[in-house]
Picture (tube, protein in one colour):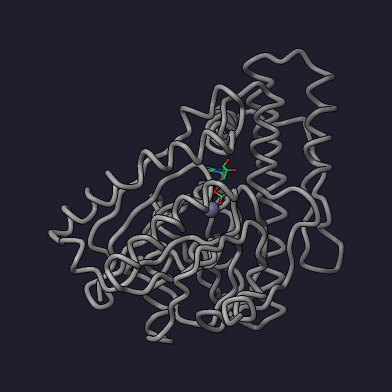
Length: 345
Ligand code: KG4
Ligand code: ZN
């Protein structure tokens, strides 16, 4: 079966064609980062309008790269939520119209399910069950995953998401949006300089006794630190380093605790922050110590993309071939754990 994947939940238009036995055939992405960077964050209305401009040309491009015609498609998978309502509506209405015209099913996919399954696009893919650390701009969660749609929430952030903390800290330091890559470049420079940082930032909720996170205090600590110093290039690098160390430390220790608590030995890390090299290095180092293996999506599938949505659609269709919502509804707020309940409504 050929499945078209459509991702329009935030500021990336991602389109892909996935085949249930041949795997990913083509994918294309248009990132709106440059358009939003002048505003220091995503402007929802601009995002929706840009998705409208990009969806059709990208669908044509991916079909042509896969040497397919529209009529060869067997199903459409689109991001139904969570995300920006207007942006989600672009993908869902496009999917609904195409599904109606081609008389094929359209399946609404949970954006985080897409991220969570994205390491399965790699050749070295994990087998169920595993623990998943989802770290994106909007979410930070630890999940126990037993199969498609079989998710148990182990812990999550009580305030800011990890990616959001990177973005807000970058803004405080006068860096460009999105903040994650900008902070990690500065932190790497500091690390390579061989200097030792005199800044120690808090590790929020490290000893909370549960698997929840909190990142808003860390951002306040960065604000206090940056108010105390004249912001030079060196200070920017040192603060970025101290901030990244604190986030990586907390994410690593909580992930190891989740593996120990569940007795599982595979950790999947997904979402935009999983692109962070220091996080990858640290997680792999500590996982090895407890005999666990860490799986990541390839770099191009860490941030939002259509391939993960097409894959999630394919896996859901294989479980329930008659599955189709053909509805026009979007779910800007949507718990992944409640996915089954909602999708059976
Ligand atoms: O998954 P994603 O593309 O979108 C959401 O679903 O939110 O994640 C975007 C987030 C942003 O907050 C961005 O700053 C962060 O991922 N990010 C990073 C890196 N690359 C992207 N954070 C840390 N290090 C990176 N290299
Ligand atoms: Zn995402």
